[in-house]
Length: 398
Image (cartoon, rainbow, N blue to C red; front, side):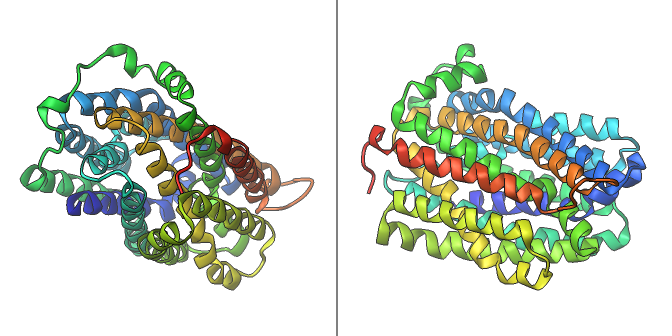
């Protein structure tokens, strides 16, 4: 548990380190406006997510056959190399190439989730997945804040540090990480299970999991608005420097970590996992609507504890699904889960960054930097509707 928590935390730090400087890096490399830089940022995210979708089930099945440890460590090594390549990339093409490679190998989160399923008893998985969410939040406390400070040394420095963190974590894993999937629970590797489209069709045939996957898809597409346009939105709306962008993400990370670690378990015990998911989705819809029209940056900070409550949905849904499958299928489930997240991550940045560009470009008919949050609120509302109307298809979990 400790290693997985540290791994996810360091991964989040690596991601968070580079977010504050990404707009300036794209503008520097591509010599484009902020509106167009947002669109290019969406395309970079698209390339990463597309590879995650295509290779998520492949790596999940590899971990079911050969164990979690080797897949996890190799993924960390490739992640580190990717950051180093981005640190020296002289063109948008090389940035795209680096994101493609990291998307292929970036199974860290899904493999870590399968690892956590191995060591968690049924009924405890939602809470334990909350610890992963909390670790991710802690990483976002440290990563963006450090990244904003490192930006003072140039737009490339955060990538160098992120690469170093990933490689250090891989070495840490080589030294201390035990394997959690014993040989008698491993299953034969089958190429047909690695097809992401066939894997999704298989999940669709399991009603108790399939309906939840649709909820995950719509909700993740909605929440993709934050990584897709937050840096661009705050720079455009409030004229923030990278350091302030980093501080805002750090504050949100603190709120998210505290809620994932302390609030999730209490909420599940008090009102049950399904009501926790519904409550969180309702809060998220309100927060997205608020960000659509907010004009005062102080209110953005004051609203972050409430906004962070929307993060309870993911671990609640993930735990519900993990309890429905066998132990030797956890890797496959997490691989498909990662593919669903990847599909959302493919679609979301294209929608959000295009919307941002259309409402902020020179000559826009209606200037509204917060327009992507309005689109996200609609998608989150769809997710809530799917969750509510599909409840009869699922076995009660509360």
